[in-house]
Image (cartoon, rainbow, N blue to C red; front, side, top):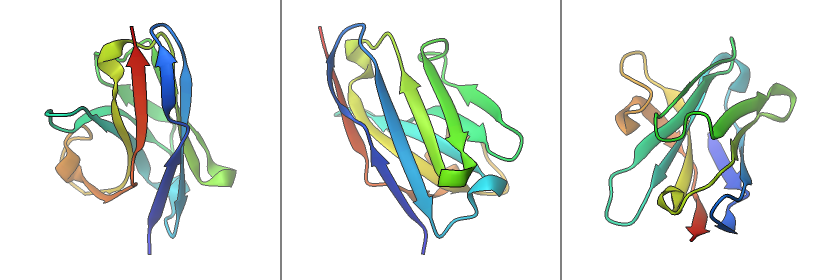
Length: 125
């Protein structure tokens, strides 16, 4: 059974930083890609970043590129999302995703089979 557990969310002021963690169990972490999504109230879930864990290639949403960094620790089965220069519009529930399908695009939530429970990030102005 695949389980994804996120942590690291919290409340910060504009310009602050947070580092989210997602630890996977029951999942071959090092041979698959992982993703981070977020969902703000009243909005659709959107892809934030993905990392192809076996080759280390990363992709980001334009809205976070240059501010967020996705990384991995294969030994810990953990993927991270380091968020800097946070803005109020980054406020959302952040979710970890795993189990990408054979076809699709990483920023489409239908591309992923497994989800964590989410961790809340709130950025105040």
